[in-house]
Image (cartoon, rainbow, N blue to C red; front, side, top):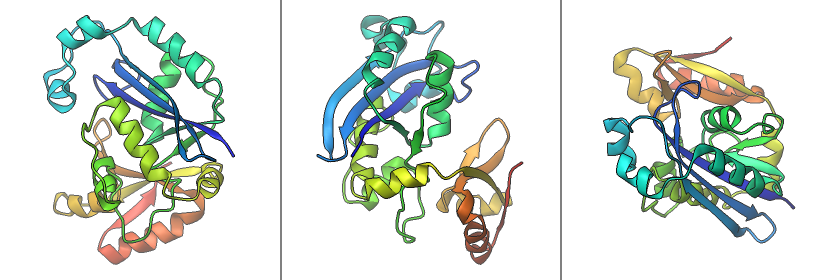
Length: 231
C-alpha cells in the first residue's frame, strides 16, 4: 500500500526558529508487510551546550554529541536521501517535528505528514496522547523514552495496530487547533483529554480533525470544561 517514513527528533527546546536538533531517528515502514524495512539514527553536533533539563530528559550530553555526533549538514543530507523513497512522513505531534525538519531540510514543506496523535482512530476509552502512556495502553513499554529511534519504533508499533488506509485517509483531512479553557485546578482534565501545554503561548492545545470539532466541544463540556478553536 505505502512506504511510511516514521520520524522523531530530540532537540534543545521547543522553538524551531532558535533551538537545535540533537538527534534524528527515522524508520521506513512497509504497510503491506506491516514491519520496518530500513533504519536511520544520527546524533547531531550543536553550537553551545545541551540545556541541563534536556540532558535530564533525554540523556543526551555535550560529551555524547562531541564523541558520536555528526555535523547538521551531513545529518540532514543523509536524512533527505533516506526519506526519498517514502510516500508519507509520520510523527507523533507532527507539527513539532515538522517545524524543525522544514527549518533544516529544504524541499520537505510540500510532503504529506501523518500525525499519530490525531490521524489514528484510537478507541474512546484511550484519551491520553502521550507516547509512553499510549504504549502502556496497548500492552508494551518503550524502553528508552525520549530517544529518537525507540520513540519512532514505539510510534510505528502503535499505528500498525490500526487500519493504515484509514489513518492515511484521516491525514488528508485538515487539522484544527483547539484551546482548552481551563483553570489551574482543571489542568489535569485537559491533559487527560489529550491537550498539550504550549509553553510559549501558555495555553493547553490539541489538534483535532476539522470534522470532529463539535464532537470535541461536547466531550470537553461533559468533562466540565470548555474548549474553542484557535484562530
